[in-house]
Length: 139
Length: 402
Ligand SMILES: [Zn+2]
Image (spheres, chains in turn green, red):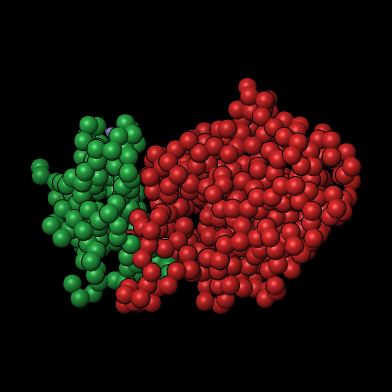
């Protein structure tokens, strides 16, 4: 994609690399507590439920729903694609497992709360940014 | 009911420096102007001040966000301090005042000078608001610093400003409760009509609903007039213990209770209820430690860094039910200066300038002391709420004059 917008990128560490580089394998990965089976975001060294440390990255389906969104018009950073859509999505596998992201491959005006979306990745340097595009629900 | 702070801390003086869009003045000088005037307002001299507190302390970024830290004010006034505290990790901007209340209530100190100073107007120059002030040249990602902490999960998604984050709260509120832009507009229109009576306000010319609805969008559903105006200016108050307040010139404004709670996750996007934010917890706590009720409040000075935050505070503080903020402000009569609950009587940050929470506290004091001049609310107000913060920041004070 030649027309990728400017993005500030995350500083990678052992704690977050699974999340920001999962896209290399086409996977959206979150830390998961093995005993609780619950996903944790942002990643942290102990499970917030059991305080245990048996945590490992695990892939989710990448299916999500738009919880809320905004169409950003203000040119905080110069870019030709205003307005663009910033959203908070909820990942299908777990209630409350949320991510701030952008909704792409869709006219900004078409985005709505409750809209089903699917992860896509946009590569910048050594980082695969998880973005979401509209998803057709199977009837 | 927990006893809380009742009658163990009070505000005895309040003052504001010159306030303007781009003053180009030394921000430390503005800070000292406010501090010296607040001490004088309390009828004290600087030798009486044994405590000093501020938010967020001496932080360099974003540029203009802090005009002075503890050490600069301490040294410039040659204060002899028994306690001091400044920092950003507090329950909102008014956290410094809450800290000061606890310091005097526990007998650690007698009189705490609390200040907040900004110079964002001058710092941002004519180029307009710059979000978080981070480097953002197009195609420059190789040169830009990498993000960590809370910025790690917001900035890579091109959400550069609290305008974006709070807009998403508002959008969710619109969706769940049917709130409309016409309702939200009342927060901005009310602020503007109050600003007309405040000689220090930035924007004083009348604004109509049409002006509001035709303004350019910033981040939907927020237009330009939903966003506050960066300024230069400083505010200071003196917080005194019950005994020490007897030495002061003016009637004590008792800190009846404080709201400093944050019971949900401290995050812009991970907080459980996107329509309430931290305000929900701070607002609830305020009423857990007093016999007063929302109906006892004579004047409400509620943070409007973005219009929606004031609406969310109205709900969080129980002035209306959850989700009913839009209907509560509809038409504007209820929140007008002569209405049932006068709101942001100085013009709020939307029209009087972004003094970052402390303009609200200052105005609450002005109204309780009956010093509002043309904008004084009728009926000799005795109980006021001052609230500041949005997103994961939230703190509030219930003030009462005998
Ligand atoms: Zn666990």
